[in-house]
Image 1 (cartoon, rainbow, N blue to C red):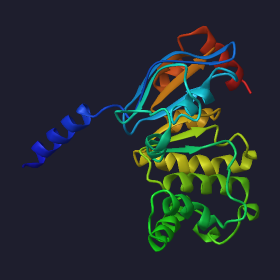
Image 2 (image 1 turned 60 degrees about the horizontal axis):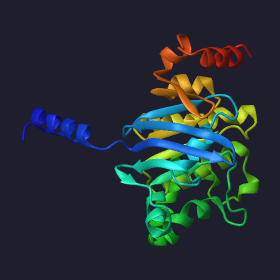
Image 3 (image 1 turned 90 degrees about the vertical axis):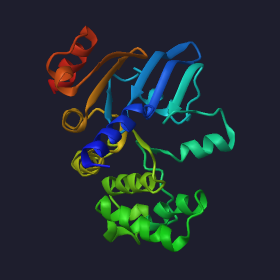
Image 4 (image 1 turned 45 degrees about the horizontal axis):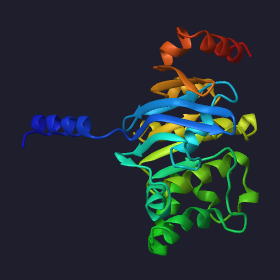
Length: 261
């Protein structure tokens, strides 16, 4: 097959592939509070989607439903064409394909940085310890802290710990990465070192959904911005359009408050 034919074939395959994330008519309540209202969303493979919005708008809940850390009341969610199972081993298997990084680092304090990254591949995927160690060291190098491999979480800064958390999520070789306010618990001077790692992932083509208040990162790394308010996706556009010409009054008000500080 010629190079041109290969390119056409590859483009056709990509076009035929299911979205990496698909949400259809998703609703979620916490008691009487309607936190997600008829969410419909498709994220193609390799896209970096930034989720913005005021506190209480449903951003984190949206992120957490994608790997069923939060159940939904109605609607469907699929990862790479496979519907999220309700529970059991099938759900556990699908979760291994969805990496998640939280506000808090959630590292095991009694294990070294290297052991934290190795743990899931060995315990969940059954990878040989020697191979898992080699891959874990490569991931720690990728996030810029290979020289900290033998230290324990308490010996690292917050920014370094969050980079370990990213390496730990990547160790499962996920299809998609979810970030729920990954820099909100960090001191300001530590934020950039984490964002740089995330920018690198975006450039490598990782499918990412990022809930954040970091406007600079949203403009720099995002290919698409979702703006949420009152449990709904109010705007869905490219970063340049969103930041320069938002359509809704809610988005204009939000940006006016955020960008004026």
